[in-house]
Length: 161
Image 1 (cartoon, one colour):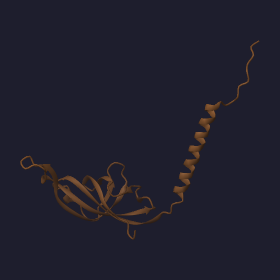
Image 2 (cartoon, helix red, strand yellow):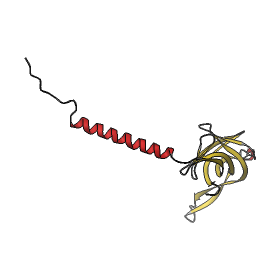
Image 3 (cartoon, helix red, strand yellow):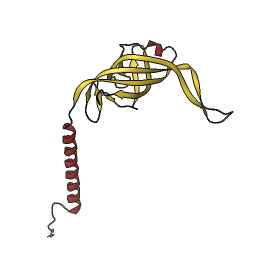
Image 4 (cartoon, one colour):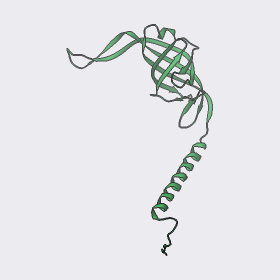
């Protein structure tokens, strides 16, 4: 007959893994409880985006009152309040004198659009009614009626903040 030794259910490695998993679960619960404690307020946000490199004529289609949506996830991101259209300017190398100079791109326009949207605001982020998070510097890809463009959010007006 073989003699089997008594072996514990858990060895040292098992105990270490269990302690790590329990610690991670406790941290996760703590972070979620802290986030759920944030107060959210509803209201409107006005932000400005700059769409660069639009083909000539496409930026002319943007008008006040247009509903904008995210081109990728189809989130509603607001209503156009105003638009300013200028020629696209790029910095290029000056091979004669050295350095950089600004050059106008003949077939492209830059549209600076002021947008208003219903939002939910917490201390850490602004989320518009479609679920889109608004932050200055964020790259946006938007679509409107008959046009689309890619650019970035250049400013966010949080009202009294």
